[in-house]
Length: 479
Image (cartoon, rainbow, N blue to C red; front, side, top):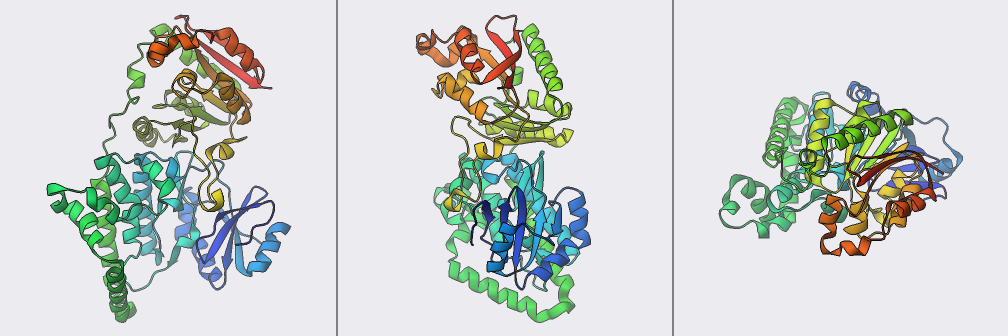
């Protein structure tokens, strides 16, 4: 795919068309002869209904395109061009906790079943078709739908298993982190990868036998031959057997739902920090109340906007921001804590998107030429009105050994007008616990030093010294 200066490729793997970003706008260029099918799809009652519900991006046909896009499309001779409403801060599969991957799988099956009833077939099933925005999944690939045929085979069946079912199985059974898996394995887990580690009686358990052991033993050549033969057999029946084909397809969807449910993890899965809010030994009641009031006042002062909560844990303050009208990205490295937050979000239906993130090693740009998915920091820059970093700074300084001025500079580079940050003194219980026997290394790290470094990039609007005497909250404005 040709790429012009000022444009950025986001998707080029589908031979039907590709996605290009130009001047902050998102275009989908569709090649001949596929434009007619795509236009019929976006005009269908199914698409319009789901689009109105926010489950597809708002899409329109482009009549006049920017000059740079015109140069590109003239060389590729497209049949039509669509423009999608840009998602302000998309969150991708390699940043999801397990519960979000599970929800995206259910969401994909819901769309596939409803589309089937209206004459459309979802031709592929991968988490990369789904983006999270404001806490909700959005299906971003309109080219994934094609007119339904008389075949009773869903060719995306094995792909769904590789990208949804088996990653969740590997996490629940063997502790493989699903978000990290998608950095290296864009197409998920092949059964042959898992088969060697499924041992003993589990090799004969129904789930493992059907989804891992037997598929791993089938050669690719045999599988393709079977699928082609079966597809031809169903095609012979013609349109008179549409009901039979639909019945078989719906059975496939039900089987995948059962497999997905079998690998779903309990909401209260144990993690290091997911009981953080109930274990506040380092906060007195007065301190916790004072902190909550300060955060609430700061959020009110900020006004409406997007908030990035770095070190959100189970989201106490993310929930507070969302309840006040903000759209929140809640970032933390503890997937168990984020799973718990995600369950709370689904009940309350608040615009909070959990993101698996270690800010000391933020999500890199991935894909071909590192251009298919931008890094977390590139996507975050300039997208938020406020950044919150509460009870995290001392972890970065001690555990990650990041110099204080580096952290402050990173927060400045995010370009948010407001910063809400918590300073923890070396005398604090939590600081001493994580520093252990190395506390003397941080003896010179005083609050005065912190304030001097902070003032180089931020102006302090308001501060609150908690009654414990070891923690201070700062509301700042970017200089």
